[in-house]
Image 1 (cartoon, rainbow, N blue to C red):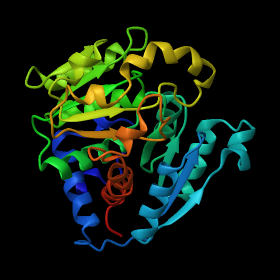
Image 2: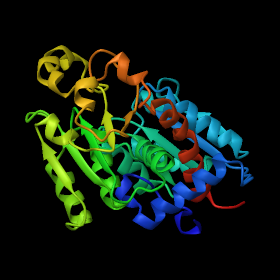
Image 3: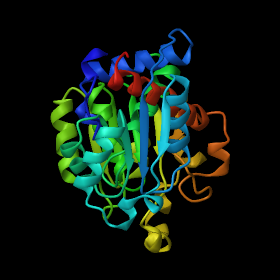
Image 4: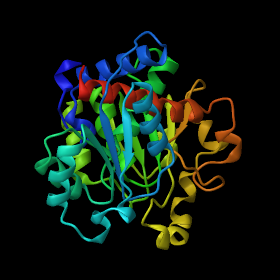
Amino acid sequence: MEGLKGRDLLGIADLTAEEIKGLLQLAAQLKAGQLNWQCHKVLGLLFYKASTRTRVSFSVAMYQIGGQVIDLNPNLTQVGRGEPVIDTARVLDRYLDILAIRTFEQKQLETFAEYAQIPIVNALTDFEHPCQVLADLLTIQECFGSLTGATLSYFGDGNNVAHSLLLGCALVGMNVRIAAPSAYPPALSVIEQARQIASGKTEVMLTDDPVAAAQGANIIYTDVWASMGQEASASDRIPLFEPYQVNQQLLTHADSEAIVLHCLPAHRGEEITDEIIEGSQSRVWEQAENRMHAQKALLVSLLGAD
């Protein structure tokens, strides 16, 4: 994966299909203990949003490959007092080897990438969540042995996870369906980009009919109905999103061997029932673990050998 050294990952489509497959292969090897890659690099975590899985998985991944992690809490640094992003970016570029950013606006991430020469990784923005989807694809590959031709159906808000799933699935030759209320679709630009990537070889579906989306699907996927920063509208969204709940009735329309994924945290009883997230078809905990393995592969690839 020498070709990724020094690159940025601002969105999943920054990678080619072959690069994604290479990352997944590397992640599987690292997970199995087949490789012992060591570095002496420093990863900065600049997180404007709360985090459990992303913060811990990036930290553990970096420690396990011999690197160090610095938590750049915005509340404890000058960035929290209004220092211009372009100034912060140029300073951190001289201290760190790689920087993962979890923030609201995609534009802020792009500004960091413009003014810093080190690799910048999207650890989540309101527009995309590429690291999550790398873990999702790793989990699907582990379950089915292959990604090609599998059908993933996502139910809920057309949010950042939906965007990265649309693009990531199209890149690796999967069918992808998004079932969302008509008032909360994914960005049209992302749907069009996914369809261009798929080039008619695989399905890219947007529908407000959850049953149609679930029909014969191999992977049933959901996320919270209101993401971070949208808490004020959460109660208003519930009546619109209730038909998209991942429950036993919805699963009857999917393939009998279908698996269930959720990027977490989950609001049990809203977008997914306890019965399903704790059920035999759930692969949610394997999916969460794979955040660490997929990100470890990404770090190794972006940093290269010492």
